[in-house]
Length: 104
Image 1 (tube, helix red, strand yellow):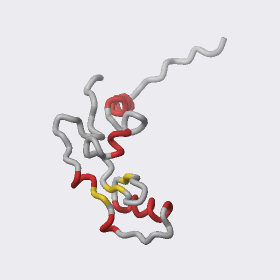
Image 2 (spheres, one colour):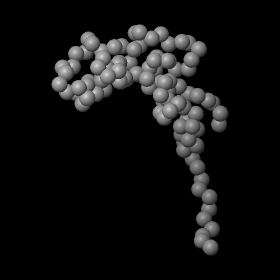
Image 3 (spheres, helix red, strand yellow):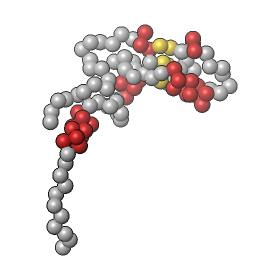
Image 4 (cartoon, one colour):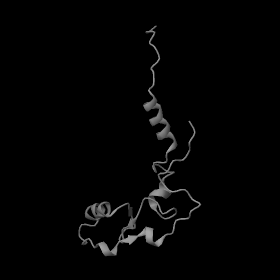
């Protein structure tokens, strides 16, 4: 048999960070798909590419997408679709990236 190691002690900071990670919606995976698309909740995605309908959270990310995916078409900022101005977020639905639970 191997050692009689003492159980690891956890600091308050480590426990608090684990609670925060477990209870905060980071917007990833299948559950965060609606948040990232920006259509339903007015979420993270602000701009939509006029050519392929891919969404991006800010202008810099959209420019990087455009340079990578549409190099032959010149980038025109005024042609981008601003999803936050066209979709009104409902107040009854939770906003993305907010704390989901206060359980400890």
